[in-house]
Length: 129
Image 1 (cartoon, rainbow, N blue to C red):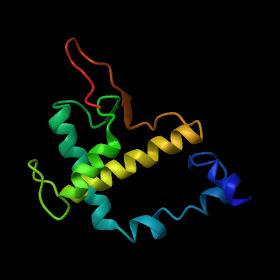
Image 2 (cartoon, one colour):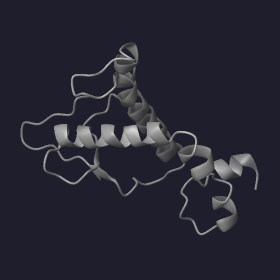
Image 3 (cartoon, helix red, strand yellow):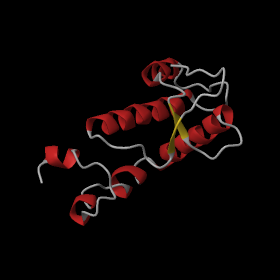
């Protein structure tokens, strides 16, 4: 399988064991960035509590669409704490992952991952991006 063919198959539950073995999720990601990945999960939890209190953890797609602008706002403040008690760099990492996820879904025609929900605005509610 060529690298370009491999890039087209991004979901890991495709049944192709040979392909999955070429994606080093532990040695190529978790073992390299354990603290950063755990921190991004904290950013996700705190964001969920702020923006969707009392609801199961989910990325509400469509509620915030300004990923690149938000990333840059947080990048300017890197090395400091945001008002929510989270490092701005944690928000940068979350937004970077969001941008990449959306690009992969678009370029590979993938559906939303199971942890995502299409956002349905309530009366008077608007997207912020």
